[in-house]
Length: 175
Image (cartoon, rainbow, N blue to C red; front, side, top):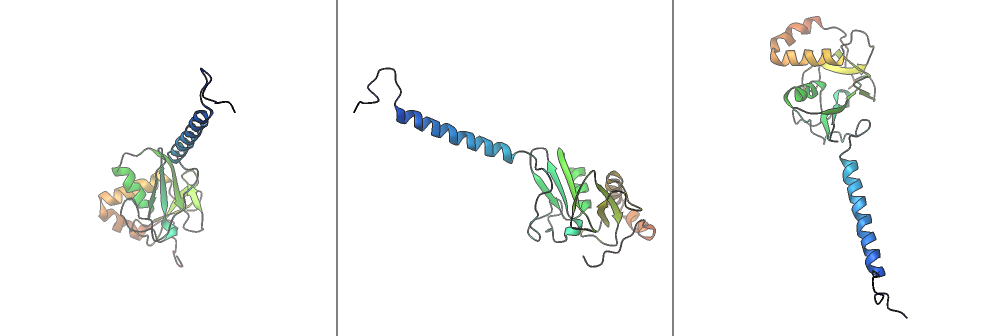
């Protein structure tokens, strides 16, 4: 049997196989790292009663009011109330890839292009807005809802004055 290493200028077969294995593993690791830093497509799964709100740290327990912010670098932040998401955006410089809001009237996530907001009697953090499908009667746009929440956070008395003049009020029974 001929020695594979005895030929001058030839690389041993075992060394070539070993290098190919190392390069292959390296490519898999780089691919996994690259994919994990890519923004998710669509809403992420929530572990209810375990996932904490990125703003107030309360556990997400009521799907009806949940929201998600997906950052451009692939991070997913969860919120227990749309108002918490708006407050977080106001105080943190974050590059947004996508926003998702749980529909108060169904078990569906709505993208920022599909969503509108209505006033409700109660929400987890008392912002008293809920997501619904765009086009609903007496609904607010995403930007109107954001401005309403931020104004009420700056001037809490505006919230109580508005409570007698709610538009699009929805009974939130059974959630």
